[in-house]
Image (tube, rainbow, N blue to C red; front, side, top):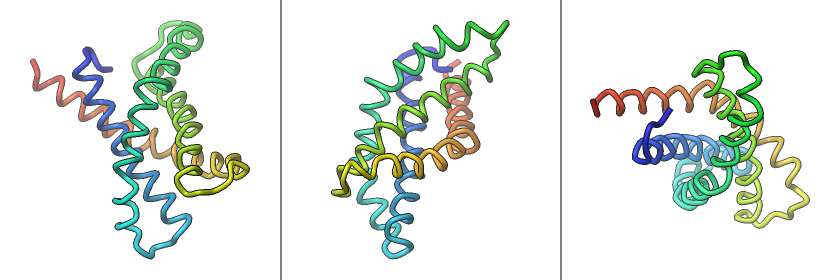
Length: 150
């Protein structure tokens, strides 16, 4: 877990950066196939990253952490770092998929009636991406940063 603002910011950049890259690639592939996949992913990445970091830092992150530490984590006898991390990760994915699905619909010019389908398609990739790939990479990066700071 980040111990100060600098670590929190670096962790958020790693986490959001990798998740936005993965989800942008997935959504471009889903809607356009392999044609111009790299180009269109890179074109959509900067705005997606900016919106994701704003949503994460201002809305989803604080709400997810508040829910985790007030409602969910205290119910465990002695929550380990892993339980806390997984709880926050799952809550973050739920919140970020909720926000970023709206963003994706608006950017692509689709109707908000596509929201339930979009949310469903995004959650089935975002949750495993976060839990199996991005989360472990970002936590390893944070551990390395924390180790080099001492």
